[in-house]
Length: 131
Image: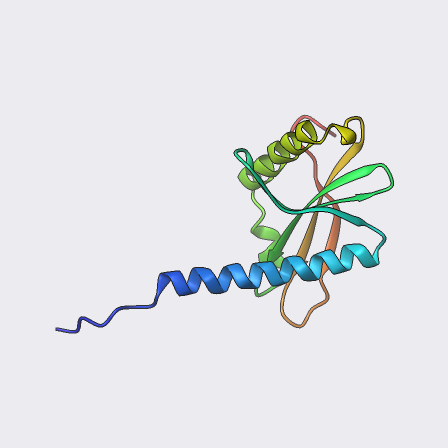
């Protein structure tokens, strides 16, 4: 009987985390090059997590970064449940940072895949109930 361990799940998760953080760094550089100022990275609260919170002018932007094998796979990975969590997390952020009260908000996505330029999707979604 072979008692050797299978693939190390912890090592796989660590590698995925490391890839994700690298993708977030690339996304932050892209945003800075476009004139955005990074307000927060990896913002976490009970409601959820936002990869990057940036601002440009008087617009506060929650940015979801997805790295996958293809850009289409990255886009498909942002489901409604995740969008809802990001929306709630941005509301939490704005309560904790009242200086941003009254600012316009937007939800963007940055999609990353190997050997492709990152794709910045401005206004990728709107919270339910908004047009």
